[in-house]
Amino acid sequence: MSQQDLPQTPVIAPSMLKCDFGNLDAEIQKLETAGAATLHLDVMDGHFVPNLSYGPMVIERIRERTKLILDAHLMISDPEKYLDEYIRVGCDWITFHIEAVPEPTALLKKIRDAGRLAGIAINPGTPVDRIAKLKDQVDLVLVMSVEPGFGGQSFIPDAIQKVAEARALFPSETLISIDGGIGPATIPDVAANGVDVYVAGSSIFDQPCYETAIREMTSIASSNSPPRQ
Ligand code: DX5
Ligand code: ZN
Image (cartoon, rainbow, N blue to C red; front, side):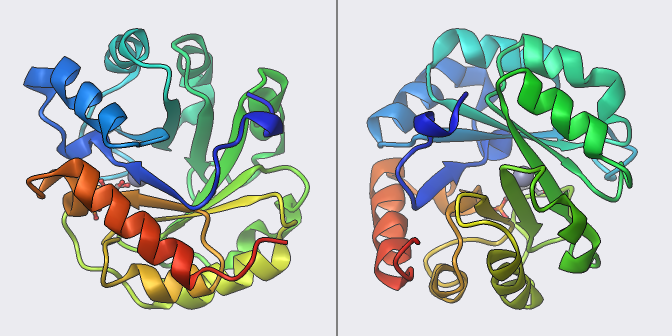
């Protein structure tokens, strides 16, 4: 995917961790109707994080069912080993963790060379400084606002300052994404500091109407965002 294919920001990215996988067709259909532009795919290996989710085979089935942007968040210890698979099954954005790959230059380049957006994620305990050297190598910075591994946790307020630091440090075209505990109550403060992509699990899937939830959060994000430069 090229920069021209970027969706209009702000983007609310439903985290599929909480979707009903027994009714995948219906869930994707509902999210498309609700106006979602991307689907956030949380890949967990039971090693980098203390939980397991799904991998390329499930993503391949999702890919067959939608043209929406697939935003893969790899919470795995060895993304290098599996990267080709995530590219092959059609992930558009591929984000892995700096804590898993301390020297990520080659891996980021490989993602870009495949025509996908390259993202780097930082856990709550990792300072933004750790990724400063990647300023020209990434298309997306994902700031974790919970410890990765589970949906439904409370937002960690330190993430607000980290968003501000990332926004100041990275070029304006770099997408800043926030993940964990995001919903109508937590969006205003992070929006004001320059988030583009809001990953939302519980605040969409625990609601009776996905469309209402996405519309409300998009509106809160828009009205609290500074103009994009
Ligand atoms: C957590 C995942 C998140 C999670 C978000 O490790 O990266 O994407 O599903 O869920 P909520 O929005 O419920 O915090
Ligand atoms: Zn995630």
